[in-house]
Length: 329
Image 1 (cartoon, rainbow, N blue to C red):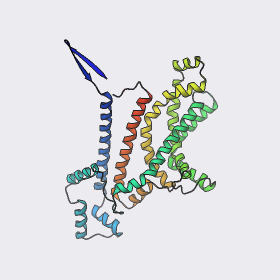
Image 2: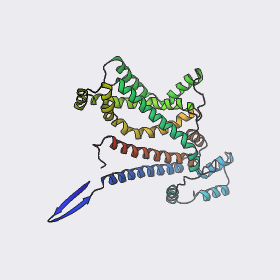
Image 3: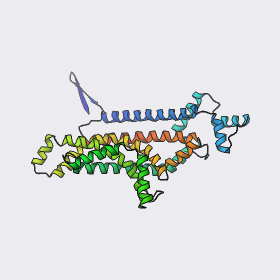
Image 4: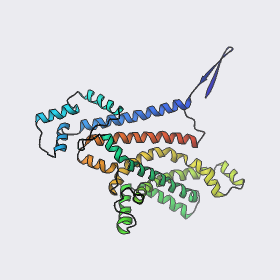
């Protein structure tokens, strides 16, 4: 936006880069979220019961007995546990800024490399579930929303039910019914396309109920707007009006929630991967938690925060493209 300020005969042109300011604010808020997650991950390592050096020795050796003073001193010196807490925190933040998430106590490998190897299938599952949830919500809304019949009432009740069903419980039912009983899908999903179907549905069905409720309510409201009546008066079919005019406006609340939903799906995907024995962060986190491999757990917390921030910024941009009335301020 350009502002012109007049002072006597002189004109001063002031260019306000609103999109740049908005983007800078969003980046700053995202950095704050990631920093808070990094601080939380650091505190996890400090407040866990037990001596960190003793835990590392026990995990490495497989013994549960107390280590000698010399062994504890060597571990404390290696990882910097003998330094003041403020110094440890400063070094931890500097490591993160250089892309270093620490080293696994159990695997003796960089945490960043371990997560990078396993995060791909988790992201694929989360994105597949988000797209499937949107597809289900849009199709059901287009054909049934705003109609006063038994199918509309049945859809509404079904969406409410799906929105309240825990994905872990739904995943177990889908696994038993379609994999164990009917044998349509493999019991152990793996990373094949057919093995992605049940985990995707387990996550998408709950989210589709949530999206469906939000979009359906807005869809019904938009159907009563004057521009919808005008479109019908010009001879456009009911389905054309719903698809070309109403859906664009009705989808805006759902688009706003998609960034939050993707973050929720990433955390939910970890549990679903355990149910279907899929490769991904789920198995890594379960093993790291059981063995108290704190660097992997804290690294996963930090990566999850970053993956939550990035989709939120992208969704905000999409929202403003879909609805030109929204300005980047």
